[in-house]
Amino acid sequence: MKNVSIGDSEFEIMKVVWGADEPIGSAAIGKAVEGKGWKRTTIATFLARLVEKGALAAEQRGKALYYTPLISEREYKKQRVSGIVKSLFDGSAKEMVAALFEDENFTDEDIEELKAVFDNKEK
Amino acid sequence: MKNVSIGDSEFEIMKVVWGADEPIGSAAIGKAVEGKGWKRTTIATFLARLVEKGALAAEQRGKALYYTPLISEREYKKQRVSGIVKSLFDGSAKEMVAALFEDENFTDEDIEELKAVFDNKEK
DNA sequence: TATATATGTCGACAAATGTAGATGTAACGG
DNA sequence: CCGTTACATCTACATTTGTCGACATATATA
Image 1 (tube, chains in turn yellow, purple, brown, cyan):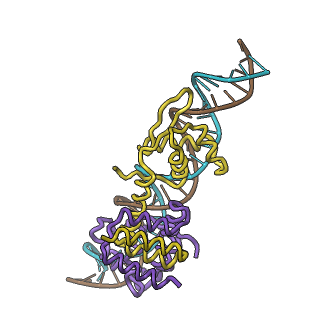
Image 2: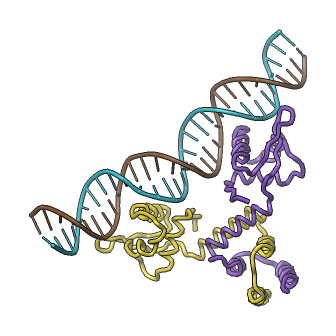
Image 3: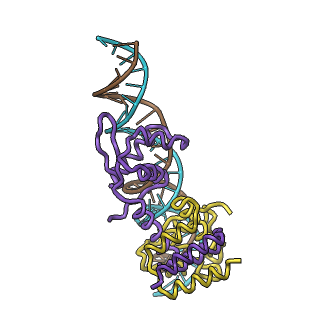
């Protein structure tokens, strides 16, 4: 419920944990973020902080810790997007969409799909 | 062009400067953000940092400094929104809109308007 | 068993940001 | 001429986030 604030690097870790359907161990996480060029301890710090913040739960399994998300990806994204809508678009999601629309690339299919989504919701 | 990073409080200042159509002086800015509860020096720091960052230009006019935005509101919002789309929605603006749609409140009028915008763009 | 390997914990340091007190100064009111 | 204002600048301190290195320990292995 509370607003967990997650940094960009931490977020990369979250994505990995969200991507796993079961509690995921540090080893697997490390493997998943190879390529980011982070030292082992760096990753460990992110994990520890995420646990502190209440974004992840950690359980000991053998020698290693296994992590489970305490906030869902959807929840988190929603939080972030709402924040942007509120601070940049005065709370108007419509404004945001309109702005997005001017700058981002949408294919005609995208638009069709979106219109469909909208039609669906429109009661 | 460069990606100016602006904090939340700094952003509040930017909004004021953007809102003025002419260079705006520190006094006016201070007046505009009364209510935020910031001390005078706090505001001055924000202004100074924004100038350092290249977000604002300052010119001396009499005793006070007058500020002009060096990045447009549109430009900045675009930057922020693109960042979110990239990091949270894998670069898919469509996904973002869809997500927005599930969480935010859109009135039927909003939807109509958006569809109109979409129709317009669809070539 | 002595050792290399895998992990977790601590403490650190830097940059960005929020926030403000101390200082210095020039203009203004009397 | 002098105190009061109105500002600007500088320094400072806390928190958050990105990144580690140093350590301690348990485990696996030669």
